Length: 413
Length: 163
Image (tube, rainbow over all chains, first blue to last red; front, side, top):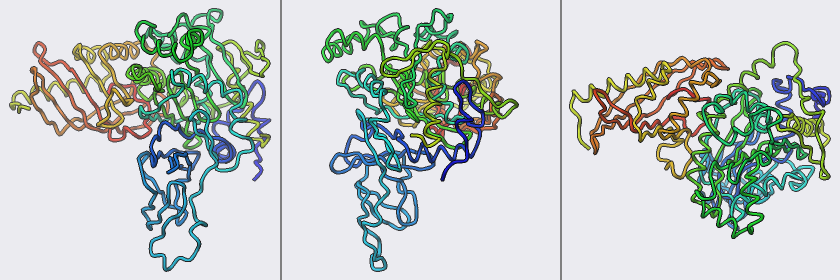
């Protein structure tokens, strides 16, 4: 179905129309074009280590099962029995030898093949006609993405320049692997889902929404709330809707991003030197992990992995888990506590982001519908790879998100 | 674990009701003053989660608890501006005497919250709360307060008030 919505009118270079956050018609359209037909982040391979390990995630209006099959490969299936549409898995994670529908006992193997039908005498269709719907899936360094439709572009093309962001997250570990075994906290926002990726790479709000945090806590973020001239962070549009706040320019010393020192985490520092050599290890330990959104629903939130889940026009859920590093278990306790401090409904940061987003969701319905998005247009620079950079407080990241969103929603890619 | 006398149970209940009232009324400093130096204020996602391995909704030691209160008192903690209206009911008490002169209190709670900061939702929070307290002066101090929400593994809205 061709959409009647004119996204070029609603999304302009320097402004966006508020209805893009509040319209049920827009929401239904983006569930189809972004969350059914495009690449969506599902989960990380480290979450399903053993054969039969599975987890259930929500993609738009659909529930999916990500499972490791008998050959050790990762499959993503629709969480819906092909018989009468019942939910196969009600638990959010676990281990199974096969999936048995609780309604009439149909049995599917981990590859999604229909293996057995109860009372087969009355059923003469070939079983292979009714296998589970299996999504197109692909992964990059253990990050699994999937789509209900064969996407127009490959995952490699979709990630594009942003593969280097995922590389940077993985290279925080001496083995190059992250391990998402710390469990999840899920926070409900009564606000449109797009405010989550927008806000997570908005470098402008830090000194305002998080003023109480800055006043109460001495943290590395204190380096990013001074005068406009003193803020050294850089905002980046990596293309394809992927965006970043690059804090590395503003850090004062090695391991600022961890709130630690080389002496305090000596075995981690040593193993990084051993793995990458002194020069590269020192650069990684100074620059720290990325703070970047991968379109549409993944946030590499420094030492956290975050997923955005739209639930309806006016609500969304943000999932968060600490990004444990394979080969550096001595950091786990600190990463757990940092994750709780920053993310989730009781955290020093995200609790306030939620309230502010929720106020926006209400206020967007009032009066003049336009939102300004021009900040930084007067001072952006573009490098040879097409990556656009500007001052940390500029809306370059948000424009990057909206530019790609408009392209996808208008059916141009 | 030892049983406690009716008199001690009465004292403990009185203390818990007092703590609940301070939390309901967002009396930040008075509430913070109830805590011992080895405080653990903890809301796990799941009851049997190990906080050394699994992320919690909230896990404060004494230092972080002080930070939490400091942040609430800045006047810019938007998720509690204005403060939520709350009146919690705590019941089904079970008391026991522990080692080192500590008492454990377990109870159910039911907390209606009027979340006034953005959506103006009336919310119900509920769960099981476990306290570890010991005597200090003519009252008690809190060493641990663990709150297991009935819906801790589900998506939950802003929770920056004192639980």
